[in-house]
Each structure stands twice: as C-alpha cells, then as structure tokens.
Image (cartoon, rainbow, N blue to C red; front, side, top):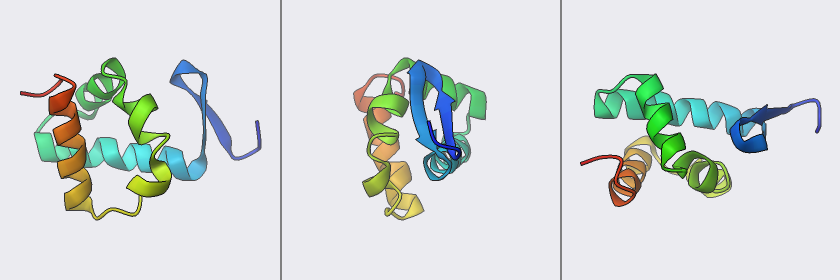
Length: 84
C-alpha cells in the first residue's frame, strides 16, 4: 500500500482520487434519489455496485458529467434490483 492509498470494505485499496469520487457519487445519489447518504452507501454495497462497478470503472466514470453519471448509476441500481 502506498501513502495515498486507503483500505476500504472488501479489502479494496483506493487512492485519494477514487475515494473522493466514491464520496462524490454517494453524495450526489443521495440528493438525486432523496435518500440518506448511509442508505445510498448500503444499497451500493449490498448490490456490489460500489466495489464491482464504481471503483474499478473510476477511470471512465469520473469523466462523465454529473447528470449522465446519476442516470448511469440509477439505471444500474434498478438493474441490480436496489431501486424501483
């Protein structure tokens, strides 16, 4: 592990940029969906979207605009059955 890396759930190592992006996604989804940040985090973890999609796809996802990103993530959450 490097100095700027963080050990997160499921023993996933994230650097500061990825960690900040994950925090941004959770915050924006919280506002977009009208849910608490804790609820959004739980939904992303329970569905494995956080560690199997957001974190490994950081290089691509962080280039998306906010609206497109929220649309992409909410669609994926619906596909995974964590949103109606």
